[in-house]
Length: 65
Image (tube, rainbow, N blue to C red):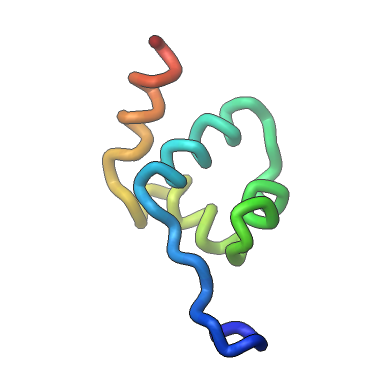
């Protein structure tokens, strides 16, 4: 929980695809995290493929289109 009593934002699969695309475009993980209002560790979990397995493949398909 954050300081205002609301639960933190949980990344969706679509967010994970966007993280891959933004990372490949050279955007820093901390900037991506800030724009999504999550801890940078959550972005790293996506990029290390610990969360939202398959999002990298989906991002590759979208990037090729």
